[in-house]
Image (cartoon, rainbow, N blue to C red; front, side, top):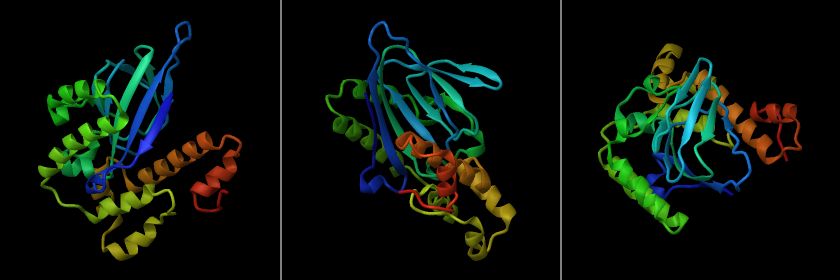
Amino acid sequence: MLLNEIKPSPFLAEYIRQYRIIDFSFPRGMAVPCKVYPPRPEHCLQFMCKDVETIRYPNPAIAVSPQKVIFMGPHTNIIYRYPGGRETLGFQVIFQPGAIYRLTNISGDELTNRYIDAEGIFGTGLRLINEQLFHCKSYPEMIGIVELFLAGLIKKINLKKHRIDEVSKAMICENEIFRLDRFLRTAWLSHRQVDRVFKLRTGLTPKQFLQMSRFDKAFRIKNRFPEKDWLSIALHCAGLCKTN
């Protein structure tokens, strides 16, 4: 089983935060469990090179049919992901905040709490890329194919970076405790203006984005250090104490 997080090449770092490669199989006779995904403040393009998965939303009860290449916007509630078989090979592209708006000119509101066929956003060429990933002999080869595709997307970009993009990036930085009020004092923008631009580019208000970033960080710390208690983790993610 492999779950690996990989930094992109430097020329893509302005637009791509990281890649995730998920590679695992379940032995015969073992029940294939569903995966519960907590809320996450990220835009994700995912290639499913082997078995696809079904997504279920608990409230309201909705099932999303399997797709080979999917796009997920930020989610404010949990989702249940059911593997369609015993062999999973997924390649996820996690975009920097604001990058999807710059690449597609699609308002973030339209992608929040959405799990959709990625071909509707990036075109049918994704099918060929997914097929190429399936035949790759190594993870570096997979990264090379995806980065070639991403480089082509970036060449077409026509929307400039906004200062809000740096603010949202700071909110998800693991080593930085962010204070929104400190930014507002120097931005010469009202709360209403910041909320409008932030939601356009990320799909969430600053308050939602910061809360979800801290929750996601807490969830990952607990996964990495299961012996830590939730109170210490919560205080750390709120910037009130440090973890060892």
